[in-house]
Length: 220
Image 1 (tube, rainbow, N blue to C red):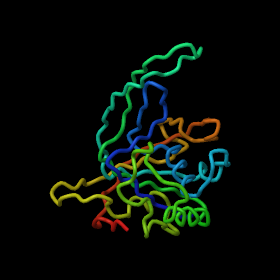
Image 2 (image 1 turned 90 degrees about the vertical axis):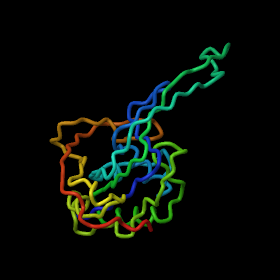
Image 3 (image 1 turned 180 degrees about the vertical axis):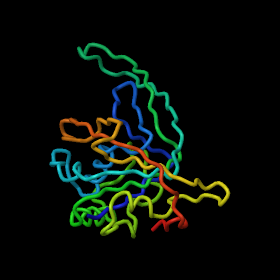
Image 4 (image 1 turned 120 degrees about the horizontal axis):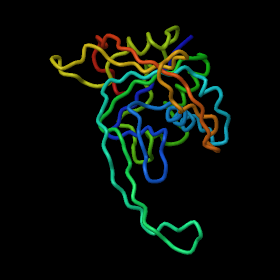
């Protein structure tokens, strides 16, 4: 078993799982549907492509910097009514994470992980973190990101920081959010089809591990 690590760092990110027209939410860390969507974009897979291999990868996230939840108030003007006879304004709120940094990991077949690693280095389509305006601050590709022979927890725990912490402010522990069939938390974010926008659920657990003892990883 091997693990591929992916950097998700940006001024703004959004990982909604319960959004509707007037309210667009965000989770506190990347969703599985969001990460699978990123992988599909990198690989050049269209919306109607099967997702079984990507959705079946074991996923985990290390929260290097949690960021803060912000809200954007929006008014959409002159939206056509359902009967086509009039127009209205729609007021809504969009939530996002500001200044967050995550180390995402996927564990599974080494050949598939190598294919994804290659695609992250030269993605077919543009990559963004939840919304088209939220572009990454650094490449998702990490040159040492493919951890052959390491399981998910080991890889997330041992990899160096993605952000710089002053020596007197560096956290002593970091939080991992992990796929876990026995986990106490339920997330409805496993994509079955992006074309039909259908999803199923997964269970996750969280744990604290010792913070990395190595310095900031190189950007490229």
